[in-house]
Image (cartoon, rainbow, N blue to C red; front, side):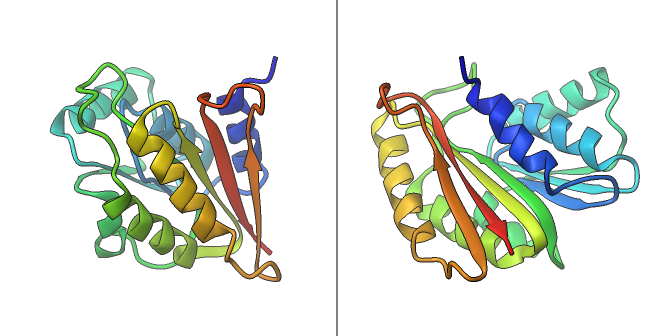
Length: 183
């Protein structure tokens, strides 16, 4: 059985490594932040965003508990403000859209901030870089976000970017993800 989150990380590992600058655009409970932190190592830089203070504190505790190198900056702000905090190109970025696992399900990522964040992320990608966007279509906003992000990514210049969508086609409400790779 395909585990989409594992597959997503496999794609990421083809592009990111020690010393790279990466962004977790939706830190949640810190699992993607942990993955990125351990992958880029002590010489790398990780920036992680969330609008919920509980997510920031949960992530801070999680990263300390699992022994991540102190190469991360946790930012209590919306991901659409990424360019205020991160300068220069990034080698990778991850979005895990939806709501905070175990948190208030009425607080979700929203199209109004997701779209500017995705556009900023694409513009920040350096050479041989990758962006992953996980979509959760099982709720109304998640379905709308997925359609909007897919529509935008389909307009990217195919000579500069390779865009793919990985999805379980016989389970329409299951999560899926899109990747953008720079050429």
